[in-house]
Image (cartoon, rainbow, N blue to C red; front, side, top):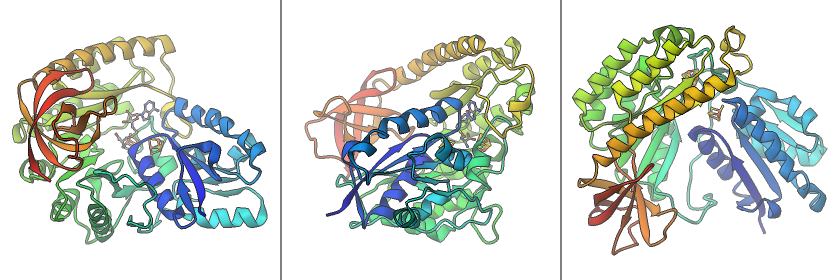
Amino acid sequence: MKKRVYIKTFGCQMNENDTEKIYILLSDEYEATSNPEEADLILINTCSVREKPQHKVYSEAGRYKPLKKKNPDLIIGITGCVAQQEGENIIKKLPYVDIVLGTQGFYFIKEALETFKKTKKPVVFTELKPDFKPPLILKDDKNSVFTDRKVTAFVTIMQGCDNFCSYCIVPYVRGKEISRPPEDILKEVEALVKMGVREVTLLGQNVNSYGLKEKGYPDFAELLEMVSQIEGLWRIRFTTSHPKDLSEKLIKVMAENPKVCKHIHLPLQAGSNKILKKMNRKYTKEDYLEKIRKLRTAIPEIGITTDIIVGFPGETEEDFKETVEMLEKVRYQEIFSFKYSDRPFTLAQKLNNKIPEEVKERRLKIIHETQAKITKEIYESYVGKEVEVLVEDYSAKNKEKLMGRTTTNIIVNFNTPRLDLKGALVKVLITEAGKHSLKGEYLKTLKI
Ligand code: SAH
Ligand code: SF4
Ligand code: F3S
């Protein structure tokens, strides 16, 4: 009988994708369980982008400590960005942790488990190589630990980041930017399509710089075209785009290639040029608005989302107002907003004029209120329209309904006479706008 592994994942889509790879790597010895109480191996795949998720790791690990009393053979491991950041310190703080594997180290999980079983001593692997070649890990019928087939999947096309935005820890915990070979990416997508996947999201910290450092690699726009040739793949998404590197070539592919979804996540971070400069973002708000104009001219229906940080050191009321103004000017479909958080290694951490917590709170609230109104108006403009939805699953709250997304990346829950449409592309009439999703009625099946 196989042993059981439980993995708790924090952080971004890249971390979710790494978790998926860990499951595959372990699949000949372990099957997945959703219950940590019955696991032989518990892994926490961690995020350190802000202080809060980092702290969560320690409380999460604490919950599993008592399980070791019941099962002395239980192995507990920490992987991901906090593992990379803290290394040996994790063992010092949490002596019951057995393995610590960084953002490249997790590929060696089997070796780490072997070593631990032999030596019974904690194994820490947090080396970050600038020329690391992530191994090709393909999903197939045998190594898929979950029985339910997914319609959508993530594919990491590049690791690391070279941008060093002054607030951000990612370049320190994910290392130098490395683009994966296009052949590996194509093989990975093909394998997923064989498993029933219809939509892939290509992942990188800055997908717009894909391939630029390597000789003979396609650029990102060309990679999109290559991936779109794969038969049986219907939709392609990608994230994240850095505004400074968003090219006209990419906008053209987005406009013309029917498989590329009409959605872009384009993190603004702040609306004041002074703050953008201090953040080392390398664009002005005028440059940013110009890119938005080009996107909307080429793709009028495009859904645009963004990330905002409030309370960066030295952010005045005036600076903050400029961020609010940008929300009103751009009219994002949805935003993700965060209070600035000091991170180790970063330049911003050393800046003066830190903003008090209550000011950050207030600014975040204003951002939320401003955006809620805009999102509502945009969602309401969908009512009465017919949209294409790729069916991902039953609705989370109601198994009598189905859910999927529009090409612009809005969740749609809809009534349907047929519930066996997972993986189909259907036409839905939008009847109601919710806060975070749309509601509708099934009209017809377009592709199955
Ligand atoms: N590479 C992506 C995502 C980076 S992390 C990008 O460039 O957009 C996701 C988001 O977390 C960032 O866009 C930023 O808005 C936020 N973030 C990163 N570091 C932060 C910090 N120190 N404090 C608050 N938010 C932060
Ligand atoms: Fe962080 Fe900036 Fe790199 Fe994004 S582009 S991961 S915000 S350093
Ligand atoms: Fe977090 Fe690491 Fe992703 S810090 S946001 S899990 S790259």
